[in-house]
Length: 294
Ligand code: UTP
Image (tube, rainbow, N blue to C red; front, side):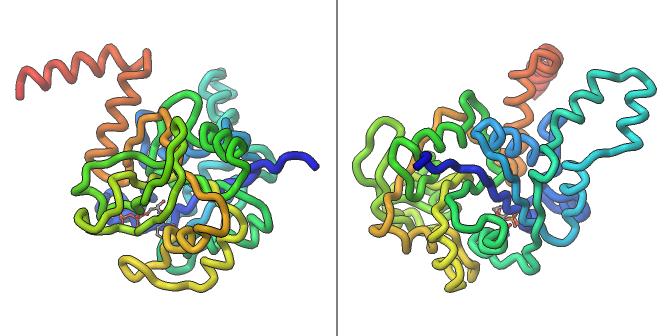
């Protein structure tokens, strides 16, 4: 029997983005650009690098521009072609997923991340799959999801989450892991708690926005139990798989930028800009000038 593969990735993008208002009143936060690419496109490229073939977006009202972004823009393409802007045209065409590789479904009410993942059940079916929260921009080579898929194969399946150590005072923003033994970047997970107060957190090892999940997660999500913030939490459904399936956290070698947060988003733009040869020299001059005037 061939080894199972992770072929599908779910991108839950139905959140309201209230931390970014008023910018996100009419524009989905996933379409805000880091330098010249929308945040969502980085996530899709990372998934593609990890071998993902099917890209499933869970959207909500006002998110149709995400669909347009992953479709042909005929007027623009013919204009670029007529003006012989070949580089720009190729850039646009290269970023398009293959025919039939993209699907969209709607989360009709923003009832939480777990509920958003449940909305993709009919498109995922009965196979292991990845979940990518595009807000968490992961920068590094190999990409974060590729590192996780390799770990998932090494372990032999189950649940694999990406994790990062955070300052204790920040545990209330994350799912937090009760860690077991570690081997290199892979840590066994003994328990998970969603958004605990720092004093109640089992560690400072926090789950960040990449997951590999078995199809068994759906029967847990179908219970639709409300957790922290009265939302249907993915962490709670994962916790119910503990003891039944292997559960591990991977600390990837990538840098993470929280683009759902204003300062995290600025940080991402600076870091990605400073790594780009076409942007870095001018950006460095600006940063130096600002430093001297501050
Ligand atoms: P966040 O916790 O960042 O929530 O969601 P949010 O609503 O998008 O943003 P703020 O806090 O109001 O600024 C984490 C991820 O889960 C998705 C979001 O789109 C984001 O990718 N999500 C969250 C959903 O798809 N549906 C939900 O009901 C909640």
